[in-house]
Amino acid sequence: MEDNPVTPTCTLKQTDAKISGSCQFDADHVSDVTGEVKGKEATWKLTLEYQGTDYTLTFDGTLDSDTSIKGTIAVYPSDSAGDFTAKKQ
Image (cartoon, rainbow, N blue to C red):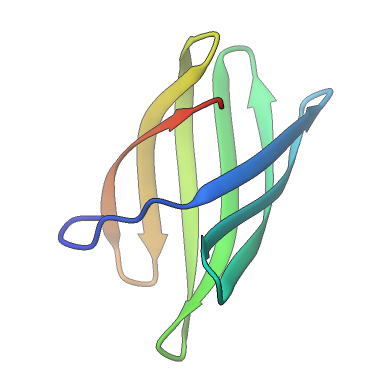
């Protein structure tokens, strides 16, 4: 985000309209994911502890192909934001 790009590996599962799973940022940082899907729109959140502060990352994206979601990411409490692309492997 902004000057601190992140490249987590996420394992997401959709059951009906719910998203669950986890994202691994490095060997020490794995976060549970919760979210939902509405049509081609997907939103999911996770909490990540970094240097003693808990950050909530909210991903809002749109399915732009069968294997890709593009959208925005917001980080609270830092009020940072950025764009993301998620690709199915």
